[in-house]
Length: 128
Image 1 (cartoon, rainbow, N blue to C red):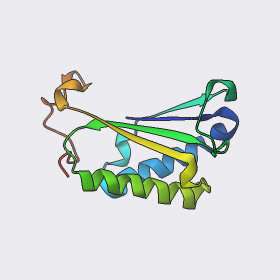
Image 2 (image 1 turned 120 degrees about the horizontal axis):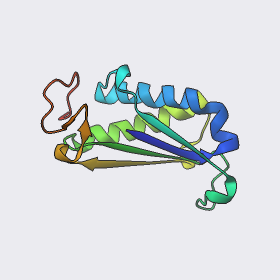
Image 3 (image 1 turned 180 degrees about the vertical axis):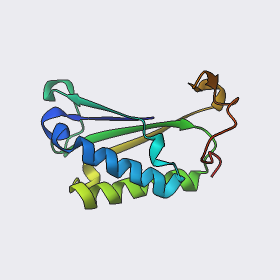
């Protein structure tokens, strides 16, 4: 699950393309299927979005929630791919992108009527 925050005047026109780039990056690094796209885009009024000095109105926060189990190298590769792919596709400088990966144990996930530790039919690997 990915949650994306940004100033609405900047985020709204690019949200579909940004979602595509994020999903492509997750497919590239995590081998996550396209069908597993779960993105929530939260456009904010500028008065509701405070961010560090030295950033532009393109400042975008990306929070990635996933089951724990991926190696540090894999998560770092995902972050680097996101910086590179977003900049090359959308022209947003890495200084204007903030990425956080939040991991929870599988038993803390619930989907399709079961918990993540009970599921046995995932079409992708978590421990990569």
